[in-house]
Length: 434
Ligand code: FES
Ligand SMILES: [Fe+2]
Image (cartoon, rainbow, N blue to C red; front, side):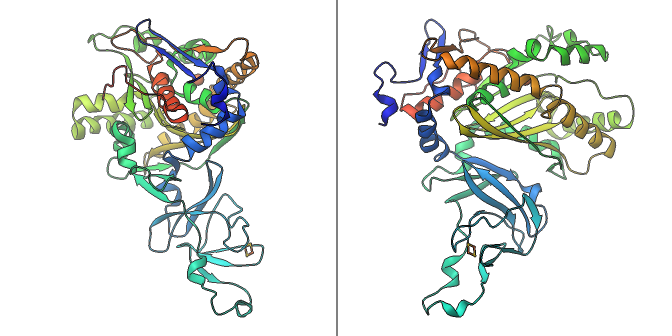
């Protein structure tokens, strides 16, 4: 084991006391560069990691430059219509091939010495090929690729571990939750809308995992937004108060392999204004009932924040779906990318409202994200005293039979898997409601 294990007081970063209902995480996990080095090796080099959605490379020869676990990648669709992922590095002497974030082109030409590849990764041309000897073989010098590339319903992932389990096995019980998003595409499917959010924050990446499905913070941290929603005429107590049918208003679930979620019967946002978009939305939701039955439609029409371990978040909470992923750059620094996902070919008015909401609620200058960034950076600043105040408490709801979205079961399921991968500790479920 590496040097992180040499501190005798910590064999694991997690204290999981089921009898007392106490769960604590050592803050060193949030500040120590050696922990990040272990995470890179044992989490990011072994887990399935999100690259992009198929709609982002809709046409042949579309490409997107992506960074996944530090590696530069090209996410593209070749001339035959197949989605492919390559290493964004020239096989000659390493230069990035795609230096723009997105585009369309039959050929990727390296700007350094002009080696040229097609969108199937083949080396198709290079200047002065005669200078190489007879053993020079273009076939061998095609683009490299991550050892594993697989997709689930349009969501594409890579794995840098050639021996990893297949993606569907890895997703396990998270796959049917992802279906609740995908099925909203009905016949036409889903698409990522133009307008990516990119921002960085001075906080450990695991703080954003926690925050992304933390119902407990919503009222205090986003108080101003909640006041605004109420001022628009929404009665929040009707949405979140006791339910007339006696069924739970919200829930938290552990989905295996570190995946987890919170869900609820209602979203957070303002109601749609009366008019065409609202009528279209109601008709679409009625179709869910026809196609999938009342129980599943109820779940589809509710809200959910899903974590696919370790760093893919898919949220359906405030008018539209958000896909978010983040990359640690240092123990206290991360880069975040987020996209809006919507049913393809939907009503243009609803489409415009979604885009507006994506900007004004989820955007880095929106009504929610700056609050969250401040909260997370504030935690990170508190962790400067991690030696003196070593433990964070994540016990909420631990002795409950039915934890809800303001509890912390979903975070504990992440941390148990994280500690299992990083430190080899054993994992067992609290509820395994799946
Ligand atoms: S590094 Fe790309 S052609 Fe030389
Ligand atoms: Fe938040």
